[in-house]
Structures are given as structure tokens and as C-alpha cells.
Length: 256
Image (tube, rainbow, N blue to C red):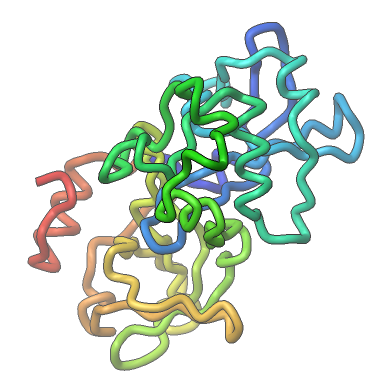
């Protein structure tokens, strides 16, 4: 299921015993485009608070009612560690979250050799919650000390997008695969260059995100973008459209 992040940010988050808030944003691994956390605003219930939830806690979203069910209780969410969105998500914060929700840390070898897309989390092994310092290998310590390098998806909204031969517009949105919890596409508003037109660019074709200068660079030509299949933000992104898009560019499809 492919869904606009802006549309998902309006979804109500329903725990097993009631509403907890709504999706406010996403934190993603900027190297692999995996969604690591949902940012949930619980301000109507607990004023001023936002919490991070692992995608593995979410069930299939209800698009008609705009509801995202989660396999948690309101008490679990209430007791979640506080998060300061003005600061980067640190590894220490991630460890607190994984301990609280009893999740297997995705950055450990026990999470799987490839950290497979579609299964960024799994049930926590008892000895992974609070490992004995004397039993950790140098590699495990290194992984635990690494900066997770996560980015808030909202940061990239509005960034200028440059093709190989010039400016083509700005980032309007992203499209997320809610089965694999991977960002698949960036939505490009072509602005004054092609007024009233939006196109999709697979994130695999992004060669650089310049966070300081608020720019994104993609490995396509302006002429190719100009004639690419037009994207209708009111229509679902289905496999038929994806096939037309990849066939037009003549590039390998991510599902093959």
C-alpha cells in the first residue's frame, strides 16, 4: 500500500483501548529510506507531548476512515520516553524506546544480517534489552555508539530539486510503502517550469540531499522529467502506474 506522507499525517492513531493522537511526521534513515519511527502528536490527550512509535507496532491503515491502528495500549504510549523534536534522535534515545516497547534493536546483528526492508523490527530477545557490558563485542559497542542519522521527513518538504541539467521544482511530498515502511518516491511540484504539474521520482534516483542548502539532486534529465507520466495526487499510486513510470525511464523496477 502506497500512501502520501502528507495524507498519512492526518491519520488518527488508535491504540487497543482508544485514541492516542494523530500521525505528525516520520523519522527515516536517510541512507536506506527506511521509516524508523512514527511521530505521534498526543497533545489533545496529553497537552504538549509527541512520542515516537516503531512502525512494527502499526496494523494495516484504514484509508477510508483515516485511522492507523497500533498494537499498543494507551498506557504504553503515555509511559513512552519523552522526545525533543528540536534535537536529533540519538542512539541513547533509541535504546530507551526499544527497552520500553520490548523491541529488538534494528542496529544489532541479532536483528538480521540485512535489516530486511519490510521487517525493520522484531520481537526483542531478552538478552538484547540490557546486554551485559562484558559480553558485548567491539562491533556491538560500535553499533550502539553510532549516530543513527535519522531525519524528520518534514525537513525535506519544500526543498529545491535539481536534475542533472537544471532546476525542476521542489519537494511537495513523499510516497511511503506502508507494508515495507520504506519511502518509495518523492513528489515533485514542477512549479513555474511546468505550472500545475506534479511528477514522481523514485528515491533510489536521488544522488544527494543537501540539508544545509535545502536542495535535492536527482539522476535524471530535465527533458525526461518533462515528458514523464503525470502524477495525480488524488489518485492512488498503484502497480500499473509504477510500471508505466519505470518503463518510461527504462530503469529496473524495485519489485523485480
